[in-house]
Amino acid sequence: MEVEKLNDERKRQKLSVAELAVKAGLAQSTVEKILFGVVKNPRNDTMQALERALGLSKEPEWTDEEKAQGVGSHSVKLSADEWEWLELRSELLEAGGQEYLDTITTLLQKSAEISKKKK
Image 1 (cartoon, rainbow, N blue to C red):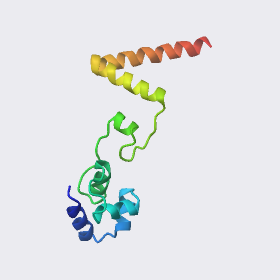
Image 2 (image 1 turned 120 degrees about the horizontal axis):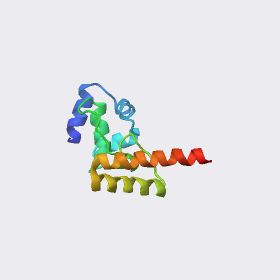
Image 3 (image 1 turned 180 degrees about the horizontal axis):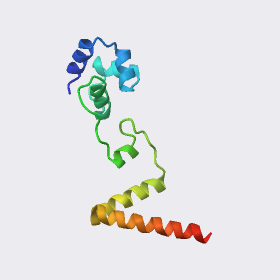
């Protein structure tokens, strides 16, 4: 969506830049830079946050990988091991589909339960 349309909608709703920033979960300075043309190519997730705050779009469905990268309101930072597991999960899903991944997950859970009982 164009910045001009966002600014028009903000004004139509009689929201200050500060109020829009709070609703969008963004820094006021970030919103000001976008709305007043200082930032020419704002990040897609930032624009989506502004659109949602103004009621112009619905909440997107983020993938696990996007969440891990800190997209949207899911700013989660993963360790190297967690990244490795996420990549392995993606490869298993791609190789055999959801049923295959579910089967492997179930086997791993059962194996973990057996290991706990032995201790």
